[in-house]
Image (cartoon, rainbow, N blue to C red; front, side, top):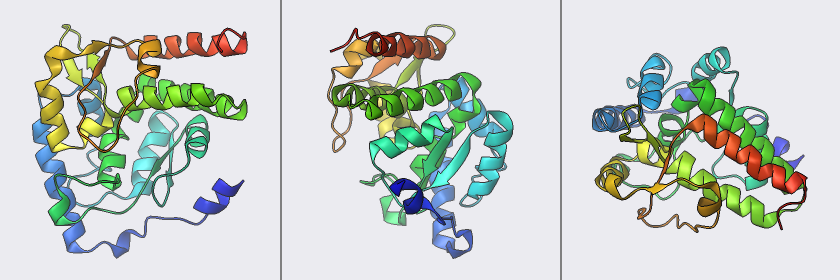
Length: 253
């Protein structure tokens, strides 16, 4: 496959980072960890803190160290990619319990905003929840469903899955044990400004419904104005299975 040739041999080259990279990483991590206190889901925060020796604030993390901890905990691996990759390749990675990460770190003057996701977004935002068995199981199933629908040529369904990913994995809320909204999505977790913006809209959240989310377009070039809240990650996986069963039985157009 083209994808395997594309990523073959890519590695982090950790020794190439200079002091500015490590300093920027530390500043991003310390500011955001403090900002998320009392706002983010305990699932996310507990996993982030559990990874403090591998996904560390002290310096740019070493990808093999994070991967070793993930493998031991939920069986997930990491794949270094040069940047954004085609959606069908992304589904194949997830279906193989592999998450992709870039290795470049933003410049010091980009602390608040970057156009393309960097390593801080990919790792600080996305990797900690993969330590949780329920979230990891959802992501694995999401990849399997996506890969199957790509192979079947179900383009509209694939677009729906991309919207599901956007409104849950990137910019979702989850319901806390006491019924309170909690931040969860990686796009929120990794962005100081998005955290505070989303938190300010926590009283206007839309109940998460797969069908509604899959019919809701999104834009990547503006700050979000619409956020959905998931009641339960396990139930969301079951809802995804129910939705996918309609394709297997011919129940979706």
